Image (cartoon, rainbow, N blue to C red; front, side, top):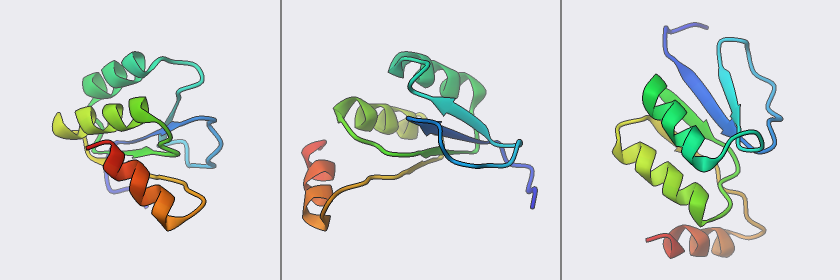
Length: 91
């Protein structure tokens, strides 16, 4: 289903199986600054940030979201408490 929206993903590793219309960006091949610049210049309607793991990932997510890029962040944790602690630690 094509709604005319520009969708990109940020993955590390780039392992999601997606249609060709979705651009996959890998942090393995680019720095956080390069990913930041690429997303700000391309202004996608939605960006899925898969596996946000460290402070740099959260900072990148926050900066892009505040700049108006539509962001969806995926956080993995071994327990809900650990996930909640990681998210609140970024405040």
